Amino acid sequence: MIGTATATEYARYQPATVDAPVIRPATRSCLVDLFVGKRFDTFRTRDISVGSYRPPADCRGPWAAVVLRLETRAKGVQYDRIGWLRFGKNEVLRFSTAEPTRYGIDYAIEKDVTRYAPLLRSPQDVRVLLGNVVDSVDDGVFVLSASLRFYVATPRAPAPPSADTILPVADVRNHAGTRDGLVPFVSARFAHLPRNIVHATLDLFITNHGCDEAWYENQTDPFVGAHPHDDLCGGGAYRDIVVSIDGRPASVVVPFPYIWTGGANPILWRPLSALHTLNVPAYAVDLDPWAGVLADGRAHAIAVRVPGSRGDWPAAGNLLLWTDHAVARTGGAIMLDTIAPRVAVRSWHVAANGRDRFGFTATRRWRVVGYVRTAHGRVTHEVDGNVHFANAQTLDLATGLANATQETRVVTTTVTRTATSVRRSSIVTTYPLVVNITQPPTAKSRPYGLVIFAHVDQGDHRHGTGIDCDARVVGTAVYKRRRPGTPSVAYGRTDERNVCHGRVQSFAIARSAKDGRLVPPLPLK
Image 1 (cartoon, rainbow, N blue to C red):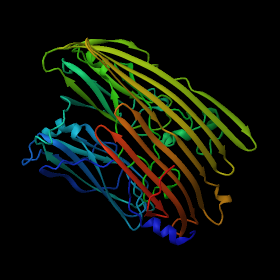
Image 2: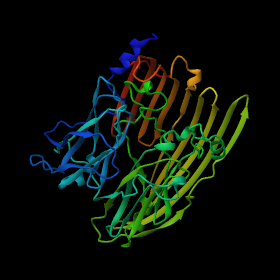
Image 3: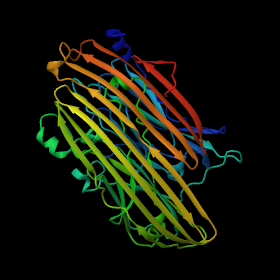
Image 4: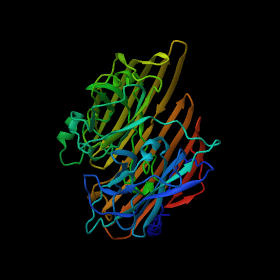
């Protein structure tokens, strides 16, 4: 199994995922091309306008579904890159790329964007950003094409309800922020909001990069400061995302620990990409307790921070607002808000027998209660969050060993009360993670110039009201290279599964890959 042949197979791979399938209604449809063959060979932090969108004349709506398709081609040597696609200032897709090969990769991702149908009723500029750096070594150029397919609504396939207003949460600081999250990664000010808001949700796109790309493997600041030449990252291993309204914490998001297609060991992700990476989902942030406040006729500001951050967290969002069509004005107030700006993280460090061991634990509990006056009376919204987090690491700088085991459990409960009813829902989300990597120093890797051993076991489990979903990936891979441009040794296996039973969709997908090729899947225990 070990030899140059397996390395060649990895070089011929085509990306695959276990993402949820897109539901397509059996109705008449129309295709609208957004852009075709757009090349990305530079890194630009400003928006790149690539075209204009006009609603389809033959499918004017309403629409039962709208599906966005992004096709990616690349050939050569290149890192994985992060990108986004927007209509005007509203982001509808966050994505990362697979790493290309000299033989070339060609793949597509699809996303149901029916939720953003109100944005598509009028002409829009289409903007896309994909930061890429091309030089004599990393010569891979990404070529993207995108389209929308509109499915006309019928009595049997009606248009789903949608928000009345969708506003962008994005500004020029979209890729900035500061160390420790003191300056927000994104903020937006709204001078005028509807006066009759009854529901509010923030769809938040945010991803981790730079020195927080593998924040679950970050060590303490004192240890990092004592080893300035070992490419370590500080801030500890706990991260959460705080969404504030008018400077006041309004909600908390516990981020999923993404492993991008260049992470741990790139061989792991050829051809199966890690969970949720090619098509990055948005976090749905429940802001219903704040609906009455947002409807008070005053200017309001929304900001997103990552306390303790040591890297980049490019963020953007869409504020979705539903209004009461029976009254011109609603209103309300926050009755209780216990969200702390940041959580106290307990940590320890023990050095023995040439190895350093670290531990991080955190608990965060919060409750937000607010009410809104509607045409049908007063409605009270309550959101409760409970987070338990634990991370243990072993680090051996002499051998290049870095192991991390992490457990994250989030219980989110929402309660809606009216004069005549009480509606309650609860979801338990867990993100178990094991990442074991050994990358020996060059002096200990001879005759190879680069050696990486890696094992990953990662899950995304969500159980509760209306949802029962389990996604998991288990992979082990070895990569050995004498020097750039020479034959390599690569071998490994990756198994992925995504099984979900819910109100909207149920599916079961299992895929396995061995030595760069898809093989019959095995069940994950």
